[in-house]
Image 1 (cartoon, rainbow, N blue to C red):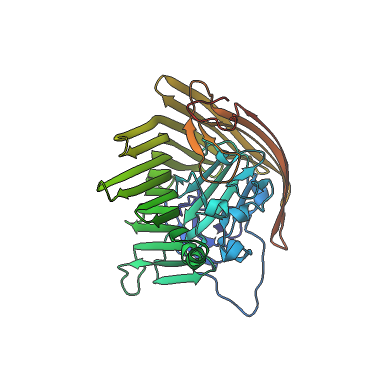
Image 2: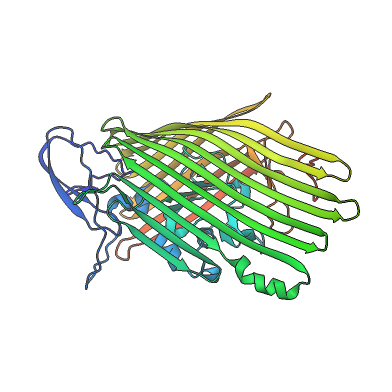
Length: 549
C-alpha cells in the first residue's frame, strides 16, 4: 500500500494485517497493489482512526501489457533482510520435472547456496549444513521427513501451496531450532468467491484439488472457505504385471505413496479469523509370497502427519496476534512376518517382527505484530514444543518358542523459544532489524538456556542499491542419526543428551542488493562466514544406544 504523492507506505503481514500512522488530513488517497492483481485506489477522510479492508481483483490478460518494477515497499534493496528467496508457485509449475512431478525442493536445489545430496539420498544442504539443519515448516508445523520415493520427490503438492520462502542467513529472531536454513511453506486459504477445481494425470501419479466457499450468499463474499488436495502414485499398479511375469509362484511386491492437504478457514469479522489445516502422507513398500502351507510378508512404511489450528486476532489498530496449536508426527516402520501350517500336528507357527521409530510434537506458538509509529515495526512471541522421540520400538512374536516381546524406548523433552525483534528506520537511508531470541531445552536433569542475538541492516547507497550485513547465532537441540549408505528413510531423530551438546552456529554475511527497476529484476551479491560447533558424526553401524560421537 502506498500513499499517493508521497514515499510513505506499508505492506501487510502473512495474514493480511497492516497499520500505517499518518498526520491528520482532510482527504487522503491510498493505492493498493500486489503482483498479479489489479491496483485499486481509495480516497478516505483521515480525521479519526480508520479501519479499511479490501480484496484485490486478479489481473486480466490485456492486448498490451506494461511491465513495471516493484513498488517501493517490495524492493529488495530497501529491506534489511538478506539471504532470502521467495519462489513463486507459478514458477515451480513451469520448471521441467522428473516424470512430470513438479517439486518444490528440486526447485530450491537450483538456488545459490543450496546443494542436493548424492543420488539416492534425501535432503538438501544449505551453506555447508546438513539435511537435519533445515527447518521445514508447513503452516507453522514442522515436517521432519519431506521426501517421497526415497528422495526423488518431496511431500509438498504444488497445487495446494500459496507461498514458498527460503531463508539461508540473516535469520530474524522469530526463527530458531536449526542452524542452516528455514523453508517456510503456506497452503492456499481456499477460494471464497466460487467453487474451483483442477487435476492432472502424470506418468506415475495423479492429483486433484478442490477449493471453494462454504455457505456463500448471493452477491456476497463467503465468510468461510475450504481447500482439499490429494495425490497418489500408481507405481504399484503399473509394475504389477511385470512382477508377475518375472516371479514364480504366488509372489507380489509393490510401492506407492499418497498425500492429502486440507484447509478450512472462517472469518468471524474484522478482528477474528480461524484456520484449520493439516497434511497426511505416507510411503509404503511391500513384498509378500505364498508357497504351499507357508506364507511371508515384509514391508517398509514411513510418513508424516501435521495439524494446525490458528487464531488471528486484531487487538487494536496497532497490535495483531497469531496464536497456533500445532501437531506434527513422523513415523518409520519395518515389519516381517512368516506363517507356516503343519498338517500333521494341525498347528500354525507364526514369527513376526516390527521395528518402529519416529518423533512426535505438540506445540503452542503465539506471535504479535506491533506498529507503534512509522519508524518501528516490532514482533515478539513465544513457542514451546513438547517432543517425544522414539529411537527404537520393537515388537517380537514367536509361537514356536512361545515368546512375545515388546521393547519401546520413548524420550520426552521440552524446547522453548522467546523472542523479540524490531524493524527500525533511524534515518532515511538506514534499515535495521535487531532482535534477541532466548532458547531453552529441558530433559530431566539436562537443561540449557542460551541467548541467540540477531542483527540485519541495509544502508541505501543510492536509489535501488544498498549494502547489507547480518549476524545470527543459532542453537539446535535435535540431531539426526543418518545412514551414510543408501537413501532409505532409516534416519533417527534424537535429542541432546548429557554426552552430546546442542549444535551451534554463527553466521556473518555481507553483500549488495540492486533492483533493476526497468526490467523488474533484482541482482544480489553475498558472501558469508559460517562457524559450527558440536557437530557430531557416527561410526558406521553405531546405534543410538551404543554411540561413538
